[in-house]
Length: 245
Image (cartoon, rainbow, N blue to C red; front, side, top):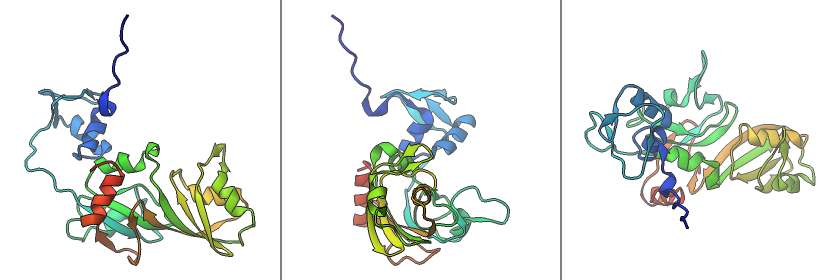
C-alpha cells in the first residue's frame, strides 16, 4: 500500500520572489526586478521569473557582499501624506523621510489612506511584509476613531459581530467606546478602507482615524511626521510575534 507523501516544510516549493522576501533580500516586487536583471542564481543557473525554490536549493545574489543590516522604524504618518504611489503634487512617505539618516532604503509595511494618520512600520527587511500583512497570521492593529454623528446603542455589538461591507462579512473585532462620537477598535484583518466602510454600513461617517498600535509597537507620543527606531526588547518581541525569532 502506498504511503501519503509528507507535507512540504515551511511552504516549499516556494516562488522565488517570495523566498527572497522571506530571506530579507528584497520585497517581492524588487525580487522580480532582480530576477529579470539576471541577478539571481538558482542552483548555479540564472533564475527566471516564476521559478520555484525547493527545500535545500541554493539561491545566490550575483555580486552580493556583506550581509544586509536590517533596520526598523515606527513612523507617524500625518494626514495628507500618501503611503504608496503618489500622484502629481502629492507627497509620499519615502519623500517625507528621505533626509533621515539610514532611511534611504526603507519602505512602508502596509497602508494608511491619505485622510488617515498614525503608525506605519518602515524597514528594509522584505521578510516582514508577508509575515505582517498575510491574513493567515491574525496580527492585531488598534485604531482611534472619531465619527460625524453620535454612536448608536447597538454600534459596539454590531461592529464586534462583523459588518457586511459590499458582500464581505468582516471578522470579529474588539470595540471600546471612548466618547459619544469616538471609539477604539482592534482588528486582525485589513481590507481597503475597512473601518470607514464598516462605519458607513452602520449609517455613520468617520471624520478622524489614527492607527495607534501594530502588535506590540505603539505610536505613543510620536509626533506627526516623526519616526523612531524599533530596537532592543521591543524589536525582539515584535519579530517573535511575527515568527521571525
